[in-house]
Image 1: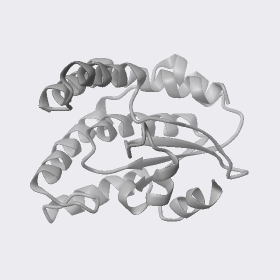
Image 2: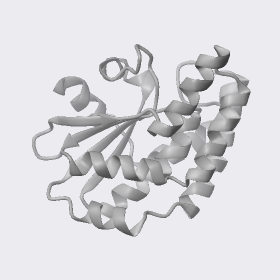
Image 3: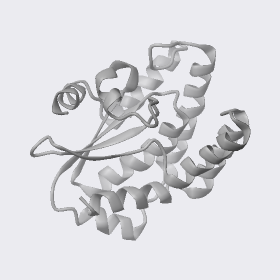
Image 4: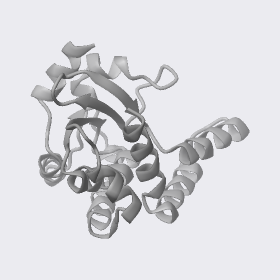
Length: 199
């Protein structure tokens, strides 16, 4: 388990580096990942706007802030992402704020398509769904748990839609973005804090 994680960490980005990577690629009309298309570039552009807004507006609740500051050990949150991923754009600003708030968590981000070996260890229903957050003990390098690709209520929303209509289309993508807008990162905070406290 450790080798793909160690390899990924070696090539990982800080949040600021990840954001810059996406911005620089967009200047060239590109997105992250092996596949390039107008759609993926368009999603990356939308996501950059989203992340800029969320970086300014996301607030960590007082309760979650206290819990994060009370963590005894130091951790690495290793997140598998891509710039075109809508869920990642909604979640990474929250995850980043939580890591900063804690003072005990170092956030590192890697790209899915560049880390095939790592991604294979964290499939969701046999799919390469992202983002996936991997919790690593900073001292020992052990993987303690993982979370993702989205909060439970958002996952239920998508699964229910897929059961009913058999597809993931623009309608559910819009509904999902609206869900994130109303949730304001609270579900993500609560789920991750609970996970950390239960370690």
